[in-house]
Length: 224
Ligand code: DGL
Image 1: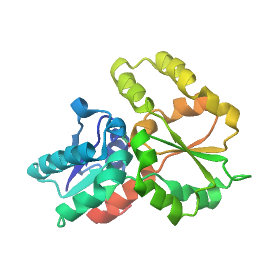
Image 2 (image 1 turned 90 degrees about the vertical axis):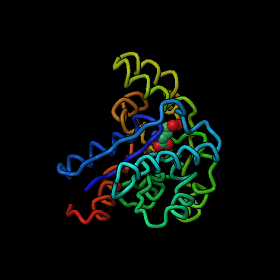
Image 3 (image 1 turned 180 degrees about the horizontal axis):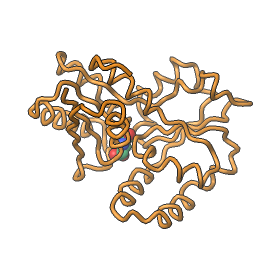
């Protein structure tokens, strides 16, 4: 089974690594788009055009399934991709808003859970639809961050955890004063630095990678 995975950068590796652990024999073709990174600060049409390009490249590589391993690309473009390539099985990664209603993440009061996302995801109608669907407009704080994915890309290059933590302190330490009980990671890049985000903010983070991997395995007919 050939599985194509794409993201703007390294974020989707969170999914690709988790998938490889569960399904060691699958062949993964991973694509990133360094010239157009970050998607989270591009306009909707431009992101769609990049997703179109990534999809065509993966199809040329003869993949059986395409994983859009990027929340920003999923909320802006997945519906259009599905319409345009109706015979291709896609798996998207959308913000895990549903966590608000899960008993294991129960919080003591409304607005005690935050959703960390890119700017484009925060503004998307798809996110609004998810908030409607799970009835959580007043229960979830949307926290767009324009720079965080970029910090992750830098970290992937320099691998200096001390530098990363000091930059995260500047960007995120204000969150520790907000008394949030959980932070949902609504961008695949953030999953790569989950431990560091937890360390700086003191807030446990929720990442839906295991759920996405299950969806991929279901689609490919693999047992979990
Ligand atoms: N990894 C992408 C996501 O999940 C965002 C990174 C970017 O802004 O390009 O939203």
